[in-house]
Image (tube, rainbow, N blue to C red; front, top):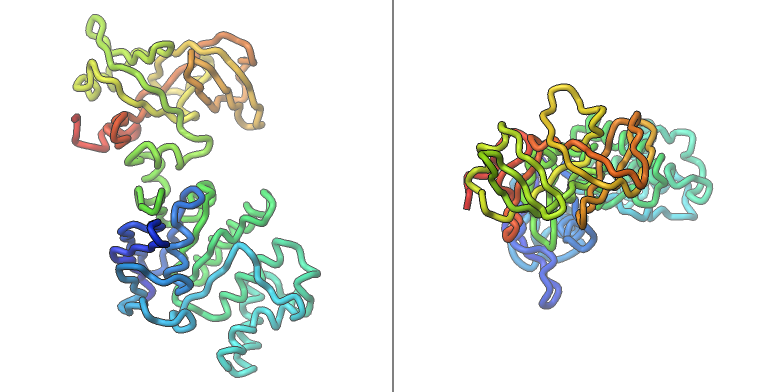
Length: 378
């Protein structure tokens, strides 16, 4: 049983709290990703679990065992770092088996485990080479193989793909996901890259300033962010935000953001009636803004007048950077669009998928998928 529990954990460096009342339960065999901007405390959380930093307050458990005072070598975990930390003078075979050698594992058992790990990672042909003869991707796989041979209860991966180029990151992401499925072991993965988190995780914990903002499946976080931070962090490109007052003219609700005015569709108006006269913060994802000629079937969208500032052709889609007065808006539209930089145009916003946030607390008031995410209309 490799369930991991952080129970009211704090980590302080002098007067600075890197983790603040950190509570998180990671289920056995789960792939949990800690994601957030640099300095949010995600690597600190991993280092506390590994025993590389001392806990200031609180308790950490692996299974039923409290590990606060357990030496790192006895915690039955394996960690893969951003830096591969391979011994340059050793062969790959010796690098992979070195940890087992230190634990005085019999030579025959070491050889067996090294061969098995090499087979899993597809590096059997590299075992007699030195690290300097390998590419970055190959060295990363060796670092993972070195962790596998220990057969730990928990794998910790701290930004392991950061040193790889874009194409290799995509390939290695898939390899790590398959590895998790094959090993059936608990994985805790740290990254600042939300794309890695979305594509690999069973669940994601989004962090900011030492505090967990939200924990959920990738789709839950994408569809139902609890606040502006999560809404803006999860999703690529990021969600658009604009402030607007909810008004009513002849029974029709409107969002008046000065230079950006939108009529609210009837099926969305009912839930916004309680906010008439209030200034709110609205969020809409780029993929929910469409070229008027290519609005998907079944979408009830509202027109918005914009000026096209920049276009980016991505092949299967086009990014439109647009201006609506002082509001900068990004849309990802059908590649057949004929809109070009400098055009005055009308685009369609799918307000059914619009998120509504309190401008002061930044908490969500209404979710853009599946209706209300909060019972509060305060």
